[in-house]
Image (cartoon, rainbow, N blue to C red; front, top):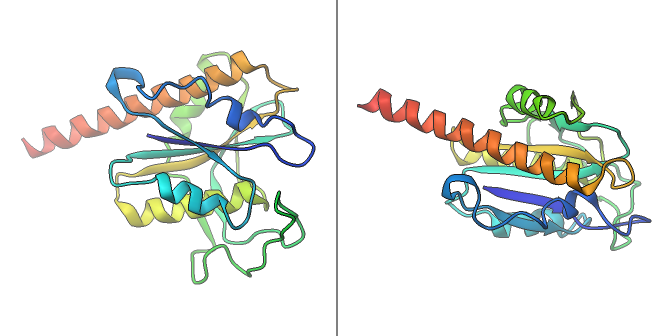
Length: 201
């Protein structure tokens, strides 16, 4: 499983999306390998950073970003457009017309979003679904991730999750968000794999 989180940018000295990854061990529940990647808030460097860590062994990708919100947001869609006015950490702006030319207008998450919402709610964490990841680098990366997942294989799961800033949610709860998401996804993947094995038997 590949987990990504954006690095600090602008006036944020710490990014909750990056901080929640620090406590994640390389070995996850039931022997799963969990790969963590810190992603620069850069139009030119964000996607290549993620792509470099995404090999054939990856079965699920969860990209985390932070938002000025009081709840975890499971993003259902990423759109094929980005703001051309927002500056990144390199002082650059998005220069293209599309995140991926000739790509679909929007892509839907392939994460089991209802299951994640229920799991986070059951853990006592504030959560809601959101229709769009916005128009900055969160959406840009979400679209690139969903596009690759859709072209990788039918069973690939990928999506984007926004978490509140550290000023709005403490690190203990942020770490719990990560734990619940990882556990729920592993459960989902293992149940799906068992169903496929039984169908082939």
